[in-house]
Amino acid sequence: MDRLEAMNLFVRVAEKGSFSAVADQMDLPRSVVTRKIAALEAHLGTKLIARSTRSLSLTSAGQNYLDKSREILALVDAAETGLDAERGKPRGHIRAGLPLSFGIQLVPLLAEFAADYPDISLELDFTDRRVNLVEEGLDVAVRITAQLPPTQVARQLGSCRSMVVAAPAYLAEHGEPQHPADLIRYECISYTQAFRSSWPFVVDGATQWFDVQGRITANNGEALIEAAARGLGIAYQPTFIAAQAVRAGRLRAVLTEFCARRLGIYALFPGHRHVPHRVRTLVDFLAARLAADADLASAA
Image: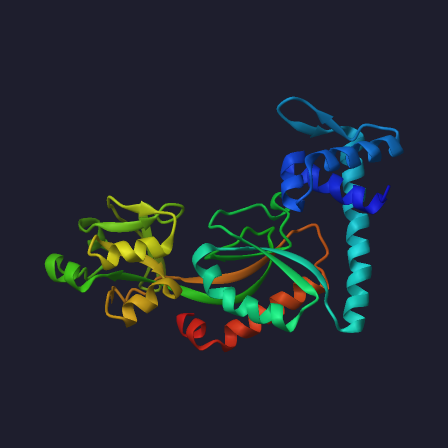
């Protein structure tokens, strides 16, 4: 039995709460994961996981073993990372979580990274959900937000701002709002997971929230921009999504004097883990490219 492999599988099962989820994540038959955990328990002479028909839970021995396993795996990873750094050749696998719209724009940069570092494999998970990195088995995730939880381990890669946009035909028919308070009288197209019933603006140097209403919501920014371009209302979106439609004349920016607050672009890390050299290399690469890329820099 490979004890480090079994230990890694146990940690993943404990974090995911599912043998099947870990098997799918690692592209293994579920029976292999179950058998390796059972072999580990037999080797240790104790039950680590209490199984039921609906859920898994750790025994007291399992919780203790989980804490120690995390420490051991982090030390092993740190040792290997040190050797990679010494050789100057980062290697290994990176599982990265990316927001859907911004993540698609990062694909050319990630392709460049993959070409520059042939010993690193990338697995990209695109979602706008706010995932738990540990539960999802992610090494790093990119998130765009105004504020991170105080306990989150992160590095800022850049920033962007939001803009309020509408189709010229919509504004010609309904008039242009002159103040954020006017938005309550317009059809506002909102993001499902945030800013659904109120939007933030900077007024007299302070952030204030203004109520909005509308018939259309979606959990994808590009869909909201398309709806706005078709004259269905006013949208509030980051510049990296909206700027192209504005440049093309499909949308026009409004309320520009009440500049919406800035959003940070962050790389997030699982809090309890050592950050491997390969992950630091990717984050350094993205930070440098985001600063140098003309389109993304102008959007930011």
